[in-house]
Image (cartoon, rainbow, N blue to C red; front, side, top):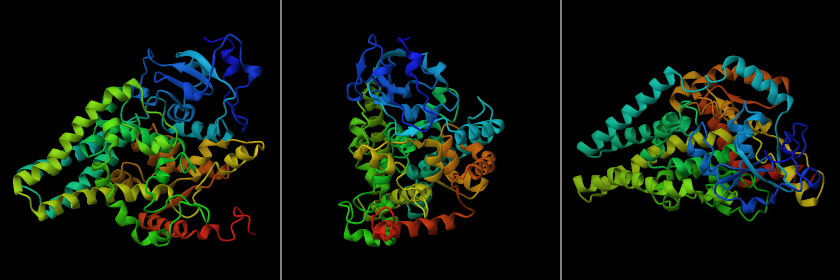
Length: 469
């Protein structure tokens, strides 16, 4: 263990930034900067760990984040962990003047965990028998429809059903698996996580983007989901006059669903499958050049080639170069895209959502004022919403319980209906805003209203944040 390691570990539960200063640095411990981290190193709370020889219980997918500050990702995935768990990893250096914009260990977080863990005991948070029944039902449906696609040829009816079945794989199978929530066995998660590739995506790119989104939900600069649709339309509510705003965004409430229908096509033409560097996560500062990522490229390319042959090339070989075949392929992609993308769009884009939870922190950083970091658990609640109940959960893979999912991302979606009432009670007790829509159409109406306001900038008219009272 590095000298003075116990002094260096600051759990910063006091609402202030976690800071490593000259007073906490032993002269025997090498100091580093975040931009000098190697692909086999990670930074947690200002301490640099070498993970090259670390046998991680969750599997080697840990290495996808090599070379980065993973303080937030580590804490959101390991809700049980204490300082003792970090002692298992090799400490090699510290980052001088390290600061984290989020705080952990608040009374709200502690009570939330305490009450939820009474319902879902440690080690039992993974997929239930019911979850596996649901998952394999959707897997079986997917392969049956793929067999029909290959043997009987395309049709508009099959295209719609097959596209939706692919979305169900994304929602109900790969999502839990790539969060490490399907099973305590890493190989099960790795296999089921490849469901992302079988529907035209990539588990490696998905983890880069989605875990970054979870860590920095609705962050003004670091959430790749908040900016991924630009310049076509805006999820992020930029101030009036911001260069990201365009005239056409005033009408985005009328057309954003049509743009979302092109999600599948954008995946098929995305060059990131070649180098496994998700561009949105890169813009948030994530480095993606670890040895694990480099080794995984050949697998990602091979599965993508298989997918494109089955779903694009083979239909033309079987049925000829016809516009009807082309239309069916596009319809399949659009059906999958709308099922996936619309449900994702509802989750964090609604009236009253906290659209920039670290705004004050970032402003104080620029002006040099004292900064108070943001309660990460409180942020997850106030940037997300939940709709429906158990049935919606079975269809969406638990994505309707977005608040619960963002609070406990490594818990299987099967448990969210059971912990939701408790989460709401704790939020109410601590005056944390919890958004709930009994029906999905209510959430959809709220999302359309938000998209209109974000596009026109109406939220900034006479807004206290604009400086024009």
